[in-house]
Image: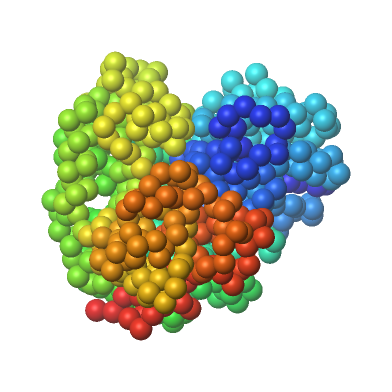
Amino acid sequence: MKVLFSNPPWWVKRFSFAGEEAPASAWLSGVRAGSRWPHTNPAHSSPGNFVFGEYLPYPFFMGYAASYTARATGAKVVFRDSIALRESYAAYFAHLAEERYDYIVLETATPCWEQDQEIVRQIKARAPETRIVLTGALSVKGETLLEEHPVHAVIQGEYEKGVLRVLNGASGVIPYDLLTVEEMNAAPYPYWDEVIAHRYWDPNPVGQKAPQLQVWASRGCPYKCIFCVWPATMTGNDPDGTGKRTVRFYSPDYIEGMLRDLVGRYGYKSIYFDDDTFNLSDRHVLGICEVMGRLNLPWSAMCRADTVSMDTWRAMRESGCFGVKLGFESGNQWVNDNIVNKRLDLERAHTVVHELKRLGMTVHGTFTYGLPGETPAQMMDTKRYIARLPLDTYQETGCGEIDGTPLATLREKGQLDRYQGAALDDRYLFVPDGGEKMRRLAESSELAIGMDQPKDTSEVLQRQWSRLGRAIAGAAAAGPVGAWGIGTDFQEALRRTPELSALVAAGRVRLYDGARAGETLGGMTIHSPSALPASHEAVFLTARMLASRNSMQQEARRLGVAAERLRDVYDEDACDEDGGPSPLPQD
């Protein structure tokens, strides 16, 4: 018996063209399994061409279920993450035709279902004997999926046990059957494919080192935010926010064994704990801190601002935690209390961020817009709240509506007792894909929403921009150089380096940017990168985001530009005398 755990490709054309041959700028790429909110983003990669540095989450539920199935059965189990492979649809279906799997397990959700149902149809048309098993947040619509699509079974919730039931003969809707804490801590470590083990990446919070290992230290979250997917659909069955949501912790011994095994095999240089909420218990967090202190690796985590003591935050910092992500959602207290139901005191959160910065940690904030019943004025409150916070980076996304969450239940019932302020009024924009909703909100308002943005008050980023400016200016003083990427980071470097502005105006710094070619800056024309082969100067890559710099390097190779001409001052090996931002800032 051959079983495939599959995270299929997800590509969306940004404009019309034939086939799959097109540059990365022509595509939106999606993230599905591994993301609490499956969504699409403008791509740096393209089908068949992987560029490292894009946000790429590890598919946790699938990885655990694959290794669990492999150990519990005699089946040949294959884990294929086509998103990480950056596989084309043609290559994906060619693989299925060659292998002829008996079962294919697919994880899906509302934002990707339009794509995924076509994949299901294609699989069944090409391999009628293959049994298709659907999992993921969309499993709440189990009976409908079975009636309308060629699906053998739909497993609800996390699916280790459900897959075993299906392989033993069960079909139809397989109800929730979550691992107990004891079973969770006795389970095999998640499945890692050595071909793509180094590809998973989350750039935030600032300070990540590649290769990065993404792991869980717990499952579940007790909070009931209206839009949140996994606690409502995967680690619990609570679509309206009235049920009990539980948290199960992995033991420090389990975590230490897993980290030693995976770091030993793949040489990871940083750890990111991507729990729904990592810091739900002082005792649990302190146990993980002891483990991380022994491992002596830089690490970061997804947290809340209000769930542990300052002593625990200090212990995190002392054990190597260089930064955290914090979910705020809205900067308006009424919205957070009455629409989101997050129950986060924004003033307390503000104080905690200041304390974390005093500890020397980097902080990434997450915010969402377009909540049901939220007014434009309340959205602007979020903008003002962000301005008050000493964050290093932050992300602003559209609030996607995904089946199985209280937000989707609100559409069915019209009102929810625990979300008294939530209303599907004329202002509300229904879009399941939060990335697409973000793009629509940004086009139709003054919000200027962006997925990942730096704060110019960040000391870490100020050091990066200053080092970039000094490096370009120092080289330009000796002879002409190029600057590739005339965006936020280059503009910030100019602000902090007066001599660089003078050198640009004097023509000592030649400017390149694909999107802004033909414009002028400081009286100088911005050229297309296609002009690079005709010159011979050193060229500085100015973009802070790793994926952007890697894309530039690939483009340079395509154009025939010698690698020796490219200068990447964000690379820690190229740091100047001040050392730049340390992955583990010193107190």
